[in-house]
Length: 330
Image (cartoon, rainbow, N blue to C red; front, side):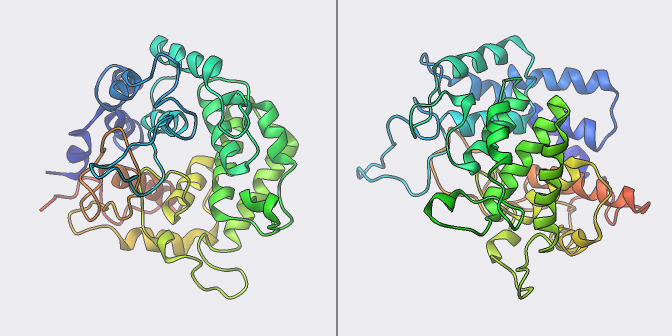
């Protein structure tokens, strides 16, 4: 089976993005498939799990009650089944934010969901830039007012160009994890509103923070900052990795900076002989349901994401893809 066929043999959340980004399908075909995300498959399952209180699992970042194992122990990892990360998944799925069912779900979040930090309304954000970057992404996507959160983030950029949730604990150096989330938020807000000269300049400074480090190397020594960043995850949760960074630059739409070339080489090196990419690093924690077959197995999400990035990179260099999308699987 060709990789394109394999990708299309999946949930509407993947199918519509493959049709749009890899198959160049007509707009009406793409729109019809996208409309199914809210009513079929993963998207419909997530929407159905929203509680009567307007939240998922009774909380913003954390469930109201933590699940326990049969032995009464808390499972390892952060739970991912509360409101914030559920909305992130719905955005990753590309659910139509203008559909009636989605608008009603988001209105419930806006009216009833409060952050655990100090009871702030969900789309007002809280104090940590890593969480606020995510809030801006969600607000921009679901057509909510997050201008105040953006203004706060613009004032929190550190001298080296990035952001760090640990500033309140004295950190003066940026975090890759925090910075990617803020940049994703600023880009989403810019796309939704047009942005401002200040926000665009701030985002560009943040991009330079990554580019100066070739997306994964220390600026001082050139060594790899964290080997875990060379493994590709989905969902990415709050974690940074090289594919997530490349996705950001691809989404920004500018011609690739030469300093992403090493990261692109890493991405190409991970393509399997059957044309797929693997799921490599699933973050532990409670989820509503699994999206794929587990680490070490071919991943439709990572394959879609990787092919989308390579298409952006290779088209900009007017080169044919190293491995055509339709390569035969063994």
